[in-house]
Image (tube, rainbow over the protein chains, first blue to last red):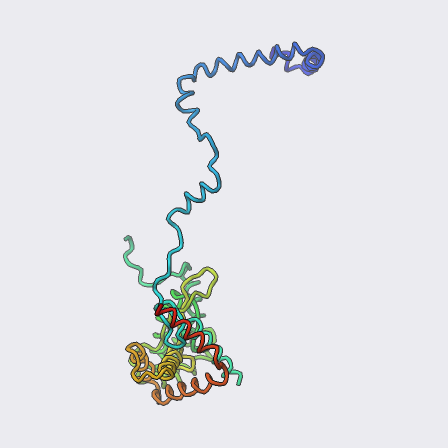
Length: 113
Length: 198
Ligand SMILES: [Zn+2]
C-alpha cells in the first residue's frame, strides 16, 4: 500500500476511484481507524488519569479579572485636614494644591509686571 | 541584605546618567530658586545643593573650581552662588534648601515635591505662612495655632528684615483679596468648614 502511495500515477488512479466509488472511500477510512485504536490501547491506563485532566471550560474574562484583582482595591484617603491658607480640605503633610497654584500665579504676574 | 543599606538613591540610572540628572537639577534650582520634581529626585538634588552652598560660603579658589565643574551654565550661576547666595546664608548654620511635598504632578502619580532655596524670592513656605496668618487674622483669632507659630519662626529667623517682610506679604494678601476675589472664595471656604464639622 505504501508503494502505491509513493508513485504519483498510482495515487491519481486511486483518487479517481475515490470519486467514482464511495465504497472504496469508506474502506480506506476504516483502515487507519482500526490502526489508531490499537495505540490508545497501550495508553489506556493513563488515559483517564492524566490525559483527560484538563479544564472543562475556558475561564471567563470576568472570572479571571476578579481573581487577579482580588485584594487590589483602591484604599480610602483618610489623612485629610484643612488648609490653613484657604480652609479647603487637603491631604496631610502635602501642600494645598489651590494655594500652591495661587502663589505660583502670583510669582508669574510679579515677574511680568 | 547583601551590600548593606544604600547610601543614596540610584534613581534607576547608571552612574553617569544620575550624575548628569543631578547636575541638571541643581543648575535649574540655582537659576530659578525653586523647582518641582519627584520627591526622590528632590531629596537627592537637595544633598548636592547644600554641598554647593557650603562651597560658596567657603569662598576659596578651590571651592570656586569645584562649583565651576558642577554646573552646566557655570558663568551664570557661580557669580550668584559666591555673591548674593553666600551673603544670604552667611548666618545660617546649614539647611539652605527645603523640600515640600505637593500633589503628584507627573501622570504616573509619582510623589512630587518642591525643592526651594530658603529665604529666596520663591520661598513657598514663606508665602504659605503669610496666607495662614492673614486668614487667621481675618477670622479674628488673636493667637496663631502651634504649627503656624513654628513656621513663622522658621521663615523669619535668618531672613533679612524677616518680620517686616512677612508683615508686608500679609498686608499685600489682604489688599489683593478684597478687590480680586469678592464673595466666591469666602463662600467656598465656609462651605468646606461646614463639612468638617458635620
Ligand atoms: Zn489652601
